[in-house]
Image 1 (cartoon, helix red, strand yellow):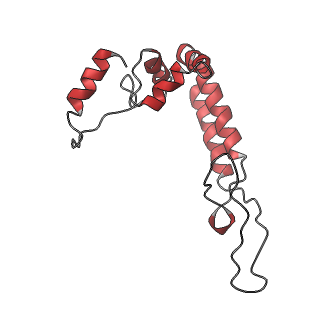
Image 2 (tube, one colour):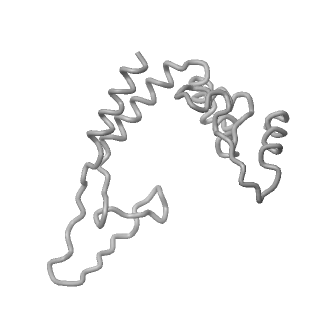
Length: 142
């Protein structure tokens, strides 16, 4: 971590009991832009997990590309929002909280009466809103 950045953080949050807060993006905290990635390139990631995106050779090219090309970041962000809007999100009793995020939990059904067990099916939730959001972001960024 950059020494000046670290010293500023220590001044902002001097103890573990501090209730002070800070923002993830010091350069432009109220603007949607690519400065988060610029901060990572300058060793000013707030969390280790953020900074690891730049130090890891697998993700460093993406961080660098987004930092030097804001248009690319916006285009990739819109594409990701559209892709997420197409996911069939399972909600309520149809969904599950995974114990291991990369694998489905073992299939178990709790039946309290005959005929109550149903095959889980995908329910597209929120897709329309995310498509609207992606469209709005595209028009703003043009």
